[in-house]
Image 1 (cartoon, one colour):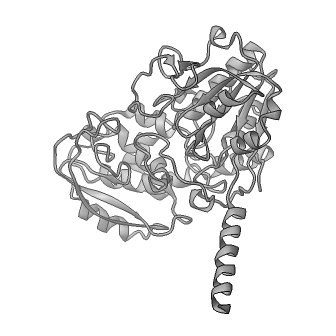
Image 2 (tube, one colour; image 1 turned 30 degrees about the vertical axis):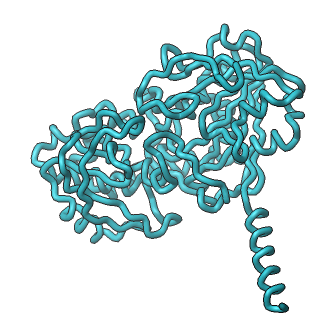
Image 3 (tube, helix red, strand yellow; image 1 turned 135 degrees about the vertical axis):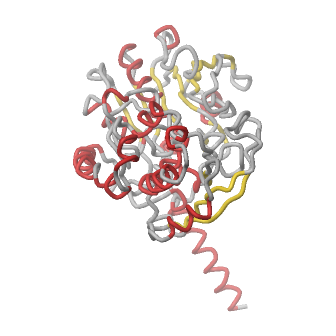
Length: 411
């Protein structure tokens, strides 16, 4: 009996400790306070399928609350329900559960219009991001901040974790001529900020114009620190988009996304997108062997044979559809040491110098520039080593890190 009691105590203590260590999101804090920060407002919410409080969607909880009125729903890329394909135009509609109008911010307009905001008292942003500059949710946030400023209404960010942690910052700072919807701000590829911190920096450093008068409010998390990657948060992973089904995918994505600019496959059309890549007539085993000799931190490489195929909303028309590929598989051995952008540069460089037709490999140089944030990467891949390329952005990263520290909400 005594052994049973001790065991029960240990299990209960571990459970309590796990609950104590669990991160509480800004949305959870807002709901837990019975929406008191919203002061009987009629609100618009920029949300998607990741906007959960426990098992409930924030929009449903707002709709059910007598303390606040749900006036409109705005959906980013992939739509309000998160099922639209990469790059697919999303249409307006009506939410069947709440009756609220749903406006697409990934169609004819990518920011709320004044007509959409006409009857709203404030605008809320609550979407789980992945921490990469070219993931478009933060572009949606920045443009919506501009709309809120123009309409003269507050903009409220309900903060959520940066899955990659707040300590890893890497990649080129966006050059002005490379600005696009996959790069709105002069920040690195991986910026190391939460969406709340990034919103503060966008306004504070005038990374977008017209935000001087914006009433920006951030409801911070509890329990998150800069050392925490997603598995340390205690929160379940909700696929942030159809091709980011796991945290491990989100971790490699900032580096292997470069393959979107090539004739090769970034693994779309498989159940492991971005975790495996390939190119025609390149032996994945040879690439794996060469990369393993570099002993890059936190990763091993191995041969991966895969055949891209249509997979519903994940990918209806993948590159190299139906072709058996001898590709490369990324195996994370230490997630805290793994460096996604640096690893991506090594992989891209290895493939570029292994293909017979280099011009035919980098088929979308403009897209490579937009993803990387610089017009120089193409020439760098041709003439420099991976380590030289990586060294080229270090001084900018140091400067950015010092600049962004003023906007930290967490240590």
